Image (cartoon, rainbow, N blue to C red; front, side, top):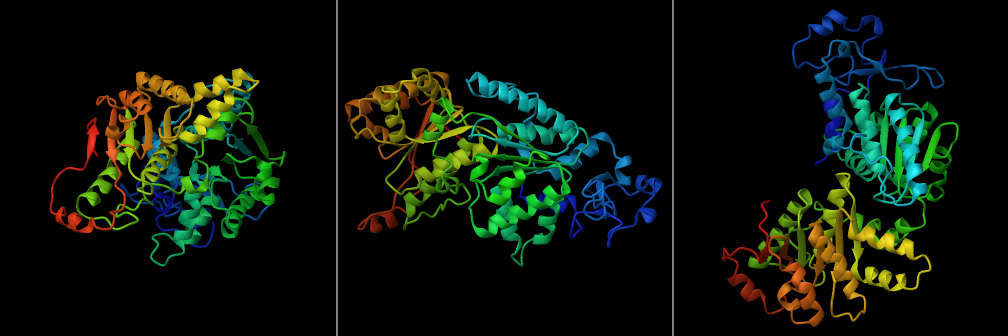
Amino acid sequence: MVKRLDEILRRAFPDRDVAPTEGQEGTADPAETISAADAGDAPEGSVCLVCGGAGFVRRNVPLGHPDFGKAFPCRCAVHEQEGERLVRLQRYSNLGPLTRLTFANLSGQGRSSNPRDQERFRRCVEDARAFAEAPEGWLVLCGPSGCGKTHLAAAIANRCLELGTAALFVIVPDLLDRLRAAYHPDSDMGYDQTFDQVRNSPALILDDLGAHSSTAWAQEKLFQIINHRFNGRLPTVITTNSPLPKLDDRLYTRLSDVSLSRVYELESASGARAGRRRLDIFDQPRFRDMTFQSFNPQGLHPLAGEQQRKLADAHRFALDFAQKPDGWLYLTGPQDSGKTHLAAAIANYRRQQGDTAYFMKVADLLRFLREGKEMEDRRSFLREVEDVREAPILILDDLDFRRGNPFWDEVREILSHRRDRRLPTVVTTSQTLANLSLDEMGARFATLFRDPTVCSEVEVPGPIQQGEAASARADKSSEDTPSRRGRKRTA
């Protein structure tokens, strides 16, 4: 799991209010810094007094000076072993599990079946490789979720680390959360420390710009960071799902400045990916806010005894699936029980790991399949259906066979394909597997979900109804395991 940004930065700069600058007040002047011999003889495990352990310094020069904002190796880094340097840089980078996303395991032509998109992606990969070898200017990567932006950005950061260049990877909504938290008097790291170290990083990767809440405060903080790096022409990589003209005007003018930025639209807004974007509702703010951290294991309504244990157990099983997506998860419970929240939390978790997770309403999928019969561009429609069939992780929310629809057979064919391929799939529904078999169409689907080697059924209990409180209290001392059928998972 990615560590908190303030923890990463505090380790990199343990005793600094701002990122280190050579000759700045509070640090040693270049003429008085520790000599190479002294740095080499420093006690093992000690922190360099000049750079605070970051391994680089910046010169205290005015804006416009050729060295403004540039990172220069600290003297202590000269004597650092290669392995030690990589560990330090990885700790500073905030990449966490994204260290696995490299150019070596990146698809060279992207994930689109459109030849134009593939050629555009190849050109972007070439430019990204060149940027990683010698960070200069800005790279702005635009495109829908799942097109490979985060993988490319993380690959750039990882290559920088391999070459000994410090790079900081931050997800924009997480960064804003940490800046807000830094105002609290009990915060481990102050606002000024976090803010200055982000905006002055030698190479900065801002992932998911535009996914944050568009408050005036958030817009102003982002503008200050981006404007500072724009004025200093500091190497920066930015990824966004939003078309650039839809961003704040001040951000748009800087990100699209041809003298500094190279902008890549990784996938066109037409064809199969556009269709999938209509289906994938995960980018709606209310779903992006549904995480494991924001899930209330106590429930929104009074729960007691067995139901309380079932809800906590459902949270644990969903987190287990998110950490090790394998097989199928069938989340069943009444309306407002939290099953959609847990499903969205799985999507959030996997996307933070750099994976593609499609989150869609079953009703939207049925509507798309119906409209597809009337589409003139059948090839585009079939590509989109294949995109859903082969999705690395597919989450279908609100499966309800009580809605009459002539396209249930097409949905069953998609699920049958995914079961045969053992592709990770999450389904939420108000119908238990036992109730599913009471309906003719439901009984046909039940054959897919009943394989205990593939599918786990997990109950997400709803609020206890009036009159059930007494029996709930009677069950409070029960030690029975929560209702769950199918494959066994360990948390």
